[in-house]
Image (cartoon, rainbow, N blue to C red; front, top):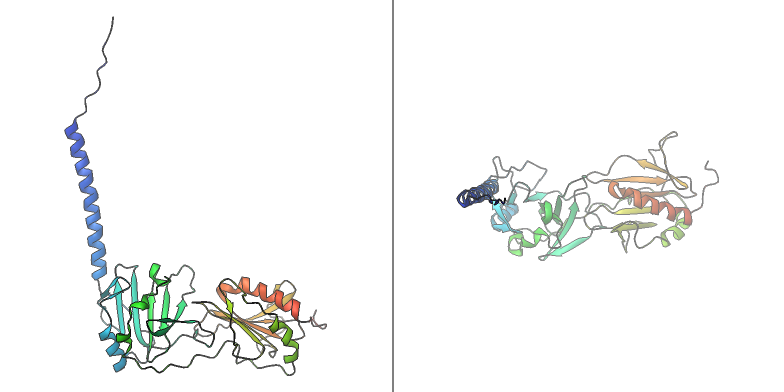
Length: 318
């Protein structure tokens, strides 16, 4: 006896209808997402008041009027009221945004060691936000007045082509060509110890071309017996030999031992920067270092090795 197996019949109409509904759902999601992001891009941008002593100046007003309708591929956005003076913004979403402020104070990171970049005929200083997880970068125009700050996030913040490339000379011509003076170099104001200079020549002469990742040595330091290293977007690393003993040091203060050198940290951060001053103790000559927090581990290890190799240990040190 034989039997014949019957294959199940597929209702093609049901299949086609299901596929059509699925495609329609995907299309609706895509259209909805596009509408949402377009609405976000059209929302006024809220910008808080920040210290900007010259934001209301005629120069800043002329600059704001001359700014382009698009910047780094983003469209210029309306500012939410109350809008601060001397400000502008461009955005495509809540996470893709560029803001501009005119008339601001230049950052503490602007010193004789700053590495500026010529973009569009202007000198710009890049300052990366050192907050963990932050991708914000601000570019400051440092060769004209009032000062200008452009802040970007995401991929646009640290591209090889900075967002300020679209701020052309026609807009910048509203500002004067008077360059503000940089802030004092780190450690330059520390008092020197009497008669210590001769003990520092070997140490400074042995300072390497690089002291931490991305940092290269500065050719002309701003103070005697000093070596400095700079990196784009970051605070400088500075070493100065022959300084007076730290005024804030007291017996029993916390010391951090790195290899054979105890370090005392002045925990007061430099105003507006992430750098603090460290003192290498227990040597025959006092050595100070200005170190950004983000670079301190690698840099202080390399500086310790340098100091151990090229300065003598104080026989009176325990």
